[in-house]
Amino acid sequence: MNLLLLLEMAASGFGDRVVLGSPRDGVTAADLHTRALSGAALIRRSGARSVVYLAGNGVAFAVALFSGAAAGVPVVPLNYRLGTDRLRELVAAHEPALIIADDASAARLNDLSARLTPEDWMDRTAEEAPETAPVTESDPIALLLYTSGTTAAPKAAVLRHSHVSSYVLSTVEFAGAHAAEAALVSVPPYHVAGVSNTVSNLYAGRRVVHLPSFDPGRWLSVARDEGITHALVVPTMLARIVEHLGDDPAGVPALTSLAYGGAPMPAPVIERALRLFPDTGFVNAYGLTETSSTIALLGPEDHRDPARLASAGRIVPGVEAQVRDENGEPLPPGESGTLWVRGDQVSGEYLGVSGARDPGGWFHTRDRAYLDADGYLFVLGRADDTIIRGGENIAPAEIEEVLRAHPAVADAAVTGMPDEEWGERIAAAIVPRAEAARPTPDELRDHVRDVLRSSKTPDIVVLVPDLPYSDLGKLARRQLADTIRTALRISHA
Image (cartoon, rainbow, N blue to C red; front, side, top):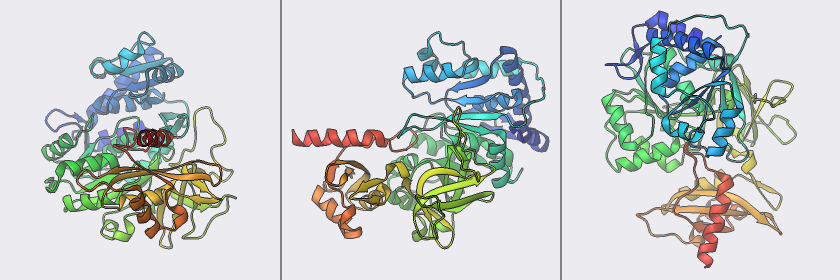
């Protein structure tokens, strides 16, 4: 199943419906299909073997995505926030490429390659005669998405057409959306959710509105003005939205579904959001780049049960999950280990890397987790982040959740730091609440000790103004230890 076929179905089923942008001047499904064929003609004529995209999410990216599908070449959305040297290195790795880049990104590429701006690309696809050409490879690469690289150098995850299509077909009903429904996509195109939300909403017949750069006030005004019914955010975005609202209700009556994912959601943030969006159904979507997006969902009804809020939900149809011990043996419900998954939407493939799956086709997510007796998945954090203190494996996420529950704590992050006696010490960086009395390290240690056993109590506690997050809300743990060391030096100065 090629992504172009999903677009062809949309163009045939509801071709006159606006699927991208505003109802007043947006792009219909039929227009998008025509532009995709025109874009494919441009790609073939250029001799490009890939399409590199370096700009914010929007209509131009959707056209590029389906043009690449029609031309049979991969689309490579790159993080335009990368350092200049790294950005040039990645662009060069995908040459010869048709490059679509905004002015700021293009200025950093110098004369490395010719490029089109998103506006040029849209103009050219409007002028070029559409052409169809058969895709000869049975299952070509649709996307190359670079992993975030918070604990190692980023790798290019390979998503083939079969992976993305399987995700869409197993989770979305074709033309199942009403004509008035609209989705707000705020995540960038180099994030798998930015791609999957565009494709799945298109297939459902739901109009997609892109917010190229996130701002909480702008997000709320677009949601109101465009009659947004469905939206997706990462936890840091939701935290900024509820902070912007204060105690005022959101006032977005059309919003029936608000999904979040991409990083752990602090309990205080979702609890506050549930109060501020009383008429909105919340959905926790857990997935990875390598799984073409969501593999577990916690639905609106489960959000009414406080005991379920810490869960990532149930595994979606078409995906199998196992929690295994260090020897690769499946564990019973309630016991934690590492999460393995398999299914048609699961790629588990990296460009230039072999052996990412086991012989049974299972992919190691490298997330620590457990499944309860009812089949709900609880994700405890990355296995690589595990602190080994005196031979005991300790998940930072468990301590972080306890610290965030303290009334004087706005945010918290925990990591391991080398120790000659214990192997690693537990170190915590705390962002205090501005409106609360400043907590002391001993007070915070006592708080953790009261909830968890003493072996999980942080040895080091520092107060910091902020934590090192990526633009997508993932904690940069490689930088966290440096943040803590800097705070310690300042406190001892």
